[in-house]
Image (cartoon, rainbow, N blue to C red; front, side, top):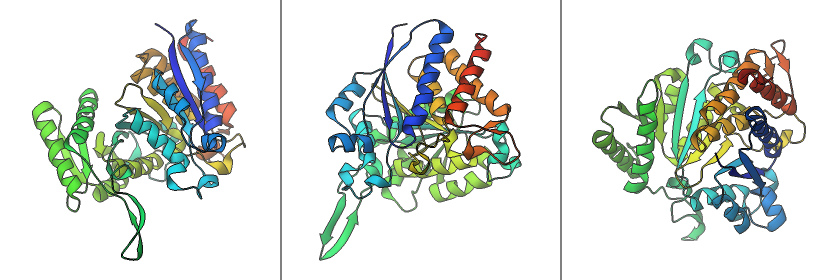
Length: 367
């Protein structure tokens, strides 16, 4: 296997701290294997990039991302940059990266870890065994549609955003969702829309149904309105297996799903579709805890596992990481976001990283 080039964007806030632990996990994979698999190169993105270059994404950063085999991102954003014009805010750097590299599908797994059942705000009997994969369309919809902006209309200041989806945009994300559903144990797909109000959702529902009928007749498909879906995620999350939805709805529903599992600090994600895939935790930059050494690195570490599976075809090594996270949690170790007084041992960011890496060595037999 040739050495794989990885573009690293630590980003803002705790992004730098969780990225440090994740890169050490990559080093541990190489140590266990006795081989050099990865070459990493770091660039700025988001607020840190704006501070240095007055733009949230430079041509140099974009060029590095394009020439890499995969991209890792920590987190971007923070109140420090909230007064900037919209096109200069940290999040625009990430959106630009997704658009330029045509990453049109965001995979967000929401799986409850058995040792964290009591960390969820929902009762154990409701969440036990949930394993949901949400596939969020990432390159279209309200976040990119035109016209957009804030302007004066008939003397009144007006904010404008436009929800736009074309048939090809819907087809490609639907096709990916059906493929993932076909590979999973339960093998069913729920498409989430707002077709009782939005014309864009009317087309969404029609196209998803046509893709299913023509190409994936073996995969059961259901349709659900987004407001009902938000309610059902709380009432009975086990009814869902794979979900596919628009950019806006996916952004909201996956944060809801993350809290069902116990903490937003536990969930990784993958942005696929283009030549290069991007892997990141779904949590934000959490500037309020930056530098305190208490951030949960597990979502970033699990994002490494997703990268090994989806970009590098290394399922054995991904299983070391995923198994190590399970083991460390089962042994009672918790970062502050998932700790309850009197239940387990509280550890910091680097302490959790050390524990995961030691568990990887144990699982692989290379202690």
